[in-house]
Amino acid sequence: YSYFTRNLLSRWTEYDYLLKIWGSIIEAILSINGMVRLKSGESINPMSTTKKGELYDVDKTRAFKIDLRFIFDTEKVEYDVGAGESSREPVASKIFHDLGKLLREGKEVLDGILGCVLDDVTAERASGWIIQICGLQGQISSLHLIRNGLYVAIPQYKLRFPTSISGLESLMDRHL
Image (tube, rainbow, N blue to C red; front, side, top):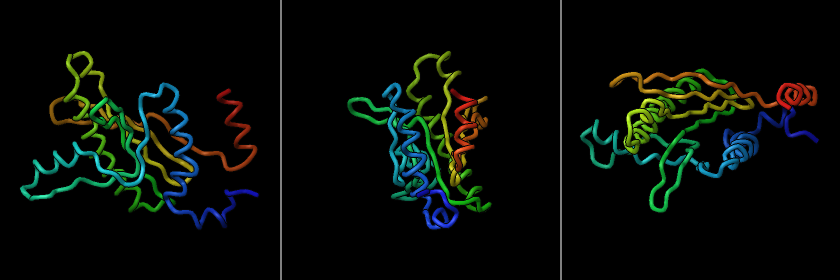
């Protein structure tokens, strides 16, 4: 019995894709070194709320809720090192809205990292990471501060979940 039949996939929500497929894969990758954990379920990066509050003179300003946050924990504080958004299917308006949201979040992630970095060499190499997932596909990008006020996103990896045995065999042949 396959979860991936077209009929069943049409009933899945974006969180079904995120939690049943991608969440497990991302958790497995992050557990390799155990330094970063995944926080899912539309949470808010506190740094984003602070920065948004500086831009708008409105009480109780809140940043965007994000589907995924990649968190580095210390004893007292959690630091965002990446952000992710998911969608169920490739609807252009949703994809572009999520990408805009992710680019803003990636900038805030990078600003948060730069606020913690002590030396210039490390700061120059720092980047924020974003992942955009659409159904069984996705893309990972990094954000970099090129010069004061100029942030650039660079696509790094494309993700595609195999939907058949032959697709899985092809994946294994390439990567194992």
